[in-house]
Length: 81
Image (cartoon, rainbow, N blue to C red; front, side, top):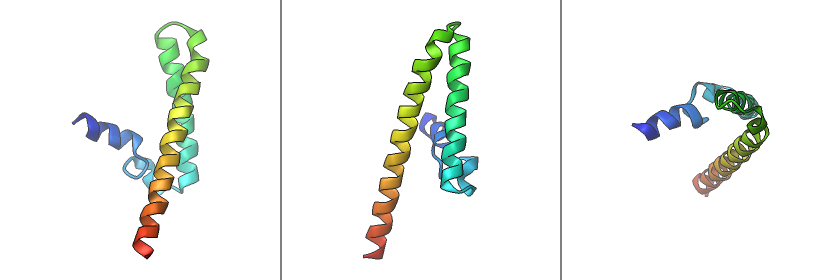
């Protein structure tokens, strides 16, 4: 159940942004990562945590997207062979 809920939000091929071009999805996910970094920073009451939170979210988001792109290209290559 938790994995399914996570995938609906974080998996760009399953969330509501799936119909948009990949670059637009990436841009919107980046904006959402910044927004949630701010929300959690303010929620814990320390604006000084905003920078590290944004950094960690960006590293995670970029890593996931690079991995997804590599997997997608490998899958397409395997199908064309």
